[in-house]
Structures are given as C-alpha cells and as structure tokens.
Length: 136
Ligand SMILES: [Zn+2]
Image (cartoon, rainbow, N blue to C red; front, side, top):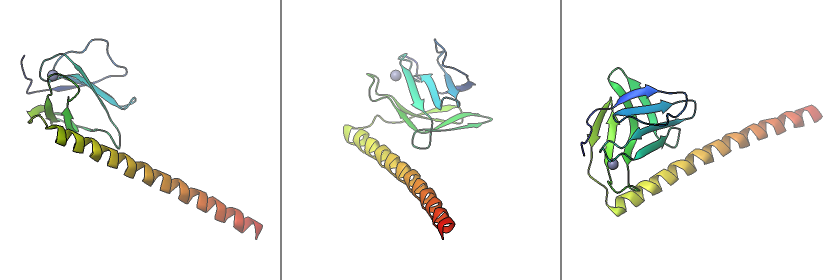
C-alpha cells in the first residue's frame, strides 16, 4: 500500500459513487467531506464539517482539514493531518489517546449546544420583556 503525501480538493454537489484516491471531496451544502483513506487501504473516510466537527479551509496550495483524521475503526489505524493539500502522517494513537480525543469532542459538543441554548434563552427573555412592556 502506498501512503499518500498529497491530496487535492474537489468540490461536489453530491457524493460521488466511486472515489478516486488523493482527492478530498467536499460538499459545503451538506457539511461533509469524503476521501479514500490516505494509506491506500481503500476505506471511505467521511468527516462531517461543522462547528463541533471538522473545520475545512482552502488555500491556493490545497485543502486543510482540522483536527486530524484518525481511522480508529479501520484495520489500518491511520492517523494523519491534511494541511494545505499535504498529508502529514502522525503516530497511531494509543487506546487512551483515542478515548481522550472522544471526550474532547463530547466537551466541544456540550459547550456548543449549551451556548446555543443560552442564546435561545436570551431571545425568549427579550420577548417576555417586550410583552411585559406592552401590558404596562
Ligand atoms: Zn487506511
């Protein structure tokens, strides 16, 4: 298997049926990116893009995905970062690191949704004040 060192961006409207290696397919409408594992094992890797998932950026050099891609559910256990169109290989994580990565993601989710709920609460509060003013 040939480990890739470069990956190109291809923007798509919908997910293609067959993927080519070395291409990061990004659909911003659907908030998702898809590529074949950069180790060459042929596994499809899907990375949701959003405030609590992966962030995606494009530069003239190529796509950047953050944080790293860790294929812990796959036999290859590949771990790499896609930055400016390059695949930077990292060490496979230990089970402890995988667990702490998962917990960090859960904390990000919680913080994000708590902030969203807070905004909603504030909007309701404003509405309530407005109604009170009308009744005054
Ligand atoms: Zn792989």
